[in-house]
Length: 211
Image (cartoon, rainbow, N blue to C red; front, side, top):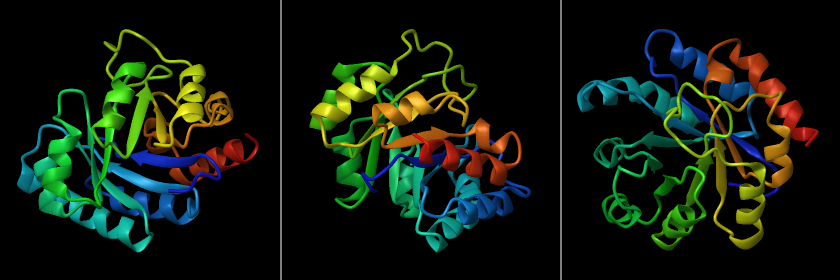
């Protein structure tokens, strides 16, 4: 994790079978140096099936030195020996996740638009905090009542050293205010996987470079 510039944190679509491993490979090849983390996010499958789907993706991430993060599930992260886990507010305490996964694990916490939740996560030992959704997003619940603004990122990065991730409907066209505010990572999903992943990563790299 570098503090030189904003980097990309890819989040998987819910469907990770079929040709998705090939798409991930292409994205990581073109995203070398800018894509530094990948979150495995599946819903409604048991742990055995999740582990089967994760295996090729985890190997691709390892080959490209990209952190492989499991969404929501500490047990799955432990089973896969993943690089870390991303916790929603209802997914448990970072301290418990640390006890399960060890000192080296990257533990992130969703903090919505809340300074309080972010400070709590930092005190509990989170390695990064995630703010969002900044824009309309299919992967972030519409029920998130409060929408954060870039000012929140600027406040956080001025006061704290723990990296912050911006998430929610982020595209190459709208990301500049988040980059300018100092976001360490942009978490992106639909803007990459709903079209040509190579073109999308290249567009993000250009937008970030001009930030």
